[in-house]
Image 1 (cartoon, one colour):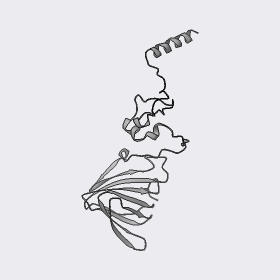
Image 2 (cartoon, one colour; image 1 turned 135 degrees about the horizontal axis):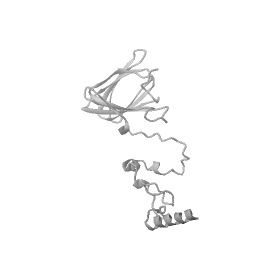
Image 3 (spheres, one colour; image 1 turned 180 degrees about the horizontal axis):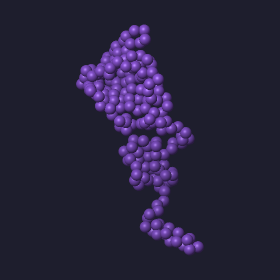
Length: 192
């Protein structure tokens, strides 16, 4: 009983000094859009620290399970800002592969920047590649195993597709050019 008295005294001290607080009231609005994990129905509480506020604001769904989510779908979000940037002559590239996002087994991506005149030299992958231009203008070219050749100038919003094994290049035409690449393999650069 001596321990119970101590516990009662400690609880009274905490309650008296506002260290222990109640969950948000049912009448409060949900806090997800404010970066806070409470639903306005009595579940959850405010975050007091140890979090990235900007990331919480960008991802309100991560703060509270949606009623249609049973929690079995892995989070496949990855910010290219979290990827290492490889600096190259005439631009840079950032990749997201399975080492960055282990739950991503069937898809990977890259963000690439080319200055005017810079060329991503002739290369090919063992997987298919999709691309979308989101800044500038690029010249893409490809040749297949039968020697058939194609080239196209692509601008903002234009997309391309190279089947696996198709040799291709990308050249920057505007002063600054960026595009997103998506591959149907978790580690598109691995040899095999």
